[in-house]
Length: 263
Image 1 (cartoon, rainbow, N blue to C red):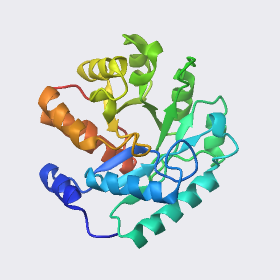
Image 2: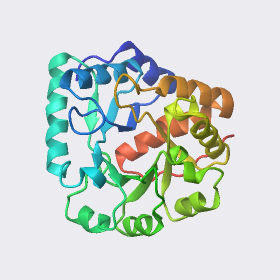
Image 3: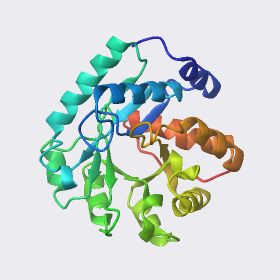
C-alpha cells in the first residue's frame, strides 16, 4: 500500500492504534447508491484517507432491491478491482470485504451458502439493515446468526423514525448479542434533527458499540474526524476511542464487540 496520508499518520499516532477502520462505507463504483463511476469512487477513497481512515469495509447494499444483482461474487470482484485501482492511483487505503445486508428470512441459509458477504477479513460479523418505511423485527435473525457464531451489527438505528424514543426493543437486540452502529454524520446533524437527537440519546444511554461513516459520495462524505472530536468533547476521549477506533478494529479482527457507555 502507498505511504500513509498525513491525516492517517496523525490518527494512528494520536490514538496509538494500528489501523483506523471504517466498517460501513458504500465505496464500490456503480453497484448501488454510492459512487456512480470509478472516478467518483477514487475521489471518495481519497476523502476517506484525508479523514484519517486507513481501512474501509466496502459495504454495498445486498438483498432487498439488490437481491440477485449484488451477489457475493459481484461484490468480491468489484472490491478486488477497486483495490487494484487504488494501488495504481497511489491512494493509501485498504479495502476489506462487507455488505450492508437488508433483513431477509433466508439470511441464515444464505450465510451458510456463502451468498451473503460477511464483514471484515475474519467474517465473524454481519451488517444488518432494516427498511426505513416499515418495521421488521430482527430479533429472530440476530439470535439465528448468533447461533452460527456471527455477531449482528445493526446499521444506523438512529435514522429509523419508528425508533424515536425507544429503548426496550433496542436493548433486547443488544441482550441477544447484537451491536448498534451509529452514523458519524448523525452525531453532527447531517441526517436531520431526529437522527441527531436519537444518536446522542443512544450514546448517552450506553447502547452504542460502533461509529461508522456510511459515506456514499461527495454529498455524503466521511466524517470520522469531526465525530471523534465531538464525542471526545461531549462523552470523553475513552468513549470516542472505543466506538470510533477500538471496536471497529475488533470487528476487523473478528472479535465480538460490546456496547459502550460514557465515562
